Length: 186
Image 1 (cartoon, helix red, strand yellow):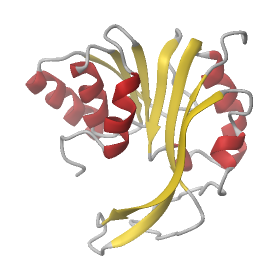
Image 2: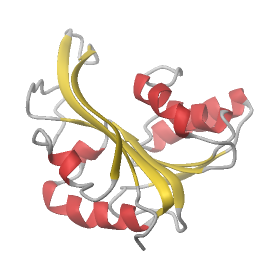
Image 3: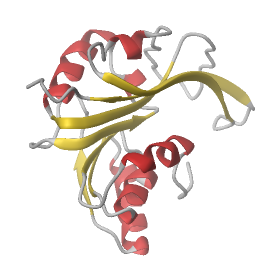
Image 4: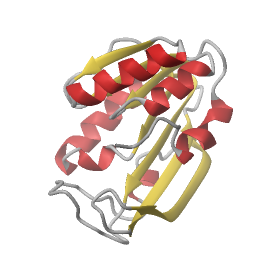
């Protein structure tokens, strides 16, 4: 559905990835960004609810000759053990119910290595187009950034992305943030 090329956001984040970095991709879908990060030499783990999406990701990884560890399940319930150099999501955190976000962010921060980074892209209420009967918990403008107070912001922006997944050309307002964990936090 989304193709096999990495997302534009993954291409932006790629400059932060060094060979051997441990990367966690939350809501990895069909695995295109996981596989891309693995081609850069990262040790990648992808988490997603969709068994079909993970199956497509496995085929893509095999075709590209890379390894990815796949974890089926909800990111609020199934997270791999360990700490990561980069925790990443592109278009998935807005599916997490609002009352589960704070505990999830606290857990993800604890899973981020010292000087590690997080990079997220979320849909915001600034421009809403509901499609495919999805249940989206849109972020308020600035809400994602507020979740990383005390972290060094490496990149932050708001924009509109264009989409046609439901057969109509439309836009989604997004906020994206890349932040680095302060070295002094536990």
